[in-house]
Image 1 (cartoon, one colour):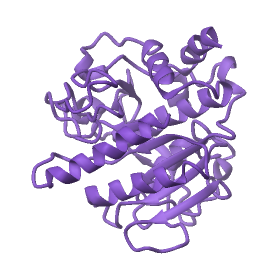
Image 2 (cartoon, rainbow, N blue to C red; image 1 turned 30 degrees about the vertical axis):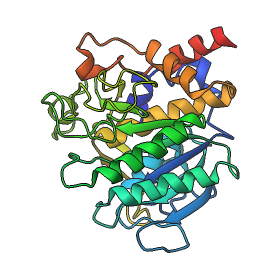
Image 3 (cartoon, rainbow, N blue to C red; image 1 turned 90 degrees about the vertical axis):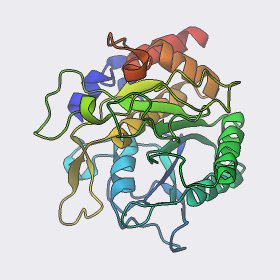
Image 4 (cartoon, rainbow, N blue to C red; image 1 turned 120 degrees about the horizontal axis):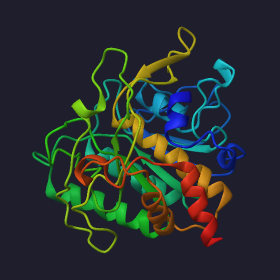
Length: 313
């Protein structure tokens, strides 16, 4: 995570004092394990797959994503701490043990979050879930999904979604990530060469987006919105008693970096609206010299985001 922090400006003096404390972040994924790096900060959990009451993760994806976003690094003496290591989690399990899930389960998760707004001050929603296409899914289910995305956005929740891993051809974005109500996060690792696996320029989905259903929020054709590192990201392993941490790659890993950055900024500037935060985040990104369909506004830069927010408050 040290490499990631350097790339996104998270280790600067301006941001070092902030940990996401007091900021509630919802994560819809495969659940969350009782990893020591996350334990004690799961405020609510609901299982939309097996209807179990205690929080768990039988796949590992959700635990890894949550660790990137807000793991404390307790089992690594801080080495593998997440971006916002003191944030509070609201976790919904919408993926099964094989990592599969349905759009209806995801929409049920959105409805649940909408119901929890009055109980918890949820400010961010992370969706590191990819769907290949809308083919074979009832159009009515997509409309229901988009309705709740619009509802949550209108309730001042910052919605961060993964672009998907079907690149590098154009127009390969996940329909979830390209949805107009989501900040769509692609992967970019700068000059990082990797540990022998695929690098982001081989897998990160590319824009432009195809969703024209929500034109009042943003220009839906300019997707992804922003990029963050996503290759060989070390985070919490759901089988932590055997191996506390594990490396994974994908835009699923990039999205919680952006969600964590939002948590840091909202800790310092709690009165920022989601529209303001999105505008500032994109405006402060580092241009990587590539087309918008590849990099969006550029690489997220937390120190620059703080500086721009300072001008508003």
